[in-house]
Image 1 (cartoon, rainbow, N blue to C red):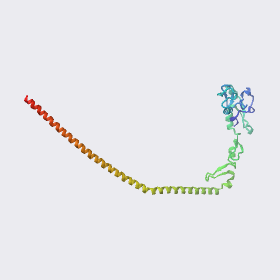
Image 2 (image 1 turned 135 degrees about the horizontal axis):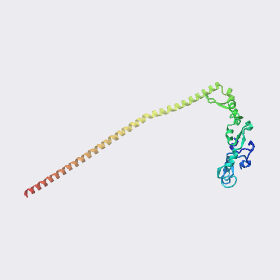
Image 3 (image 1 turned 180 degrees about the vertical axis):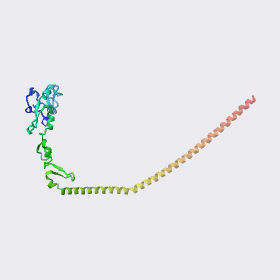
Image 4 (image 1 turned 90 degrees about the horizontal axis):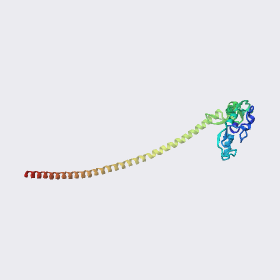
Length: 267
């Protein structure tokens, strides 16, 4: 849509303008400001699309050569004057007779039934109000059959996509899918067969590992038993020594007591 990219041509204004029209023009496209923003340094207003394109091509330098462009809202006075303007619809050459306030212009032109559209099939220009009907009948539009997935132009359906052709195409695809599934199934069977062939060897390895582990476990148990017997013998010797020491100490203690008693008796 024209208003998305550039300012609005002065010729589209309907009725008199209460403000000096040159003060409402973009300094770049020279049309009436559209979605304006201003430079904070010089207070000059531009169409937002125009100034953004300018800044991208000129390293952020303001179009008015003041300094770096610093964006601010468009001055309220300009916004108010723009809101008082009325414009002919951009689709007036196609039959639209609507005169629309500035603030409602974008919404109207997006929805306008006189908006020209390009047919996706024949690429002819068709008004929006007629587009659905044209789209449903244009012979150049490509269709996709939901049954066989064949793509064909609507106008060629009688020769390119008959019922017999559709059935043959479905059959061809079924055969192709069958062959593909057959190959895939064969590969899966081959993989399972190879794994089954490897199974006896794996079982044998597992048995060998089990025997090895069993032997290792037996040797470990024997080693522990031997260690236990040695520890048992050492513990028995230590207990015997402790008993002997205890008996010796007991005898010494008894002798000492008897000696003391005898001394007491003599005294």
